Image (tube, rainbow over all chains, first blue to last red; front, side):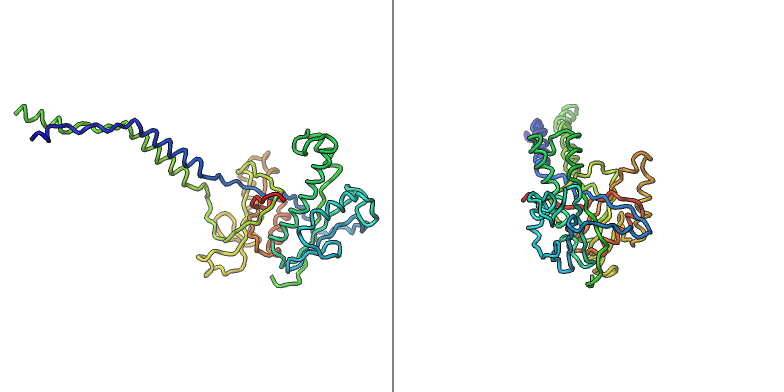
Length: 180
Length: 156
């Protein structure tokens, strides 16, 4: 009879908030907010007429061909993808004034041509390397001139350097030699 | 009799509801964390390549996604194993891209329309053929800002 008369003891709920916060912090720390990132590209506008034949000095064109076996042919020479960035930088700046490389960075044109059977991953890697070459050159120019990295100089200074080392990548229609 | 009643009242104390908000908050946080904010179910296998020169996509409302990859196991019976395009939550053909992009543009303010970016989420093992076809369609639709979705890689 004595048991029935005793009231149930109240549970202390003061620490409930702490537990909730603990869980909240745990989830905050462990979750990664997935960000959407990628290589930004501007496509040329579409026109039904064939593009005009441009007379380009061959020394200014840096042609990169990728075949369906994901092999590179850079200026008629086979090349590994790892060597592409350094080679492209040398071609654009032409520090030794060689007659077979770009006259000026403003005149350099990068041309990428793939096959319909080329893997997209390889294509993006090539594109990324070439873009990286340009970004590194701009960064070096910024360091030389302003003693700061490219992202920390003012907008106008960035614009000036961008005009001096413009990124010109032209993409030709892919060949259709291999089965997709 | 009155004594009997008193005893009963003592045996049923009110349950404290002070901790109820905490429990509710806990559940709320749990679901906030677990829920993925994805409106479209991905029906393709997509493993984007990695790259170093990445740009962040700033405004989600100005981005439309075009997926290219091989159909997942569930859809291979109906759609085969060759690379396909997915727009929104359904499989699409090449000629539907222009309409898809235009619909997205029309849903926005006129001022914002030139800033629209198409994000191409393409599987790394897809061949360039279909990717080039998609790019050509985008050019025809005058959608020239394109972002090749990629995973960040370590800088070499």
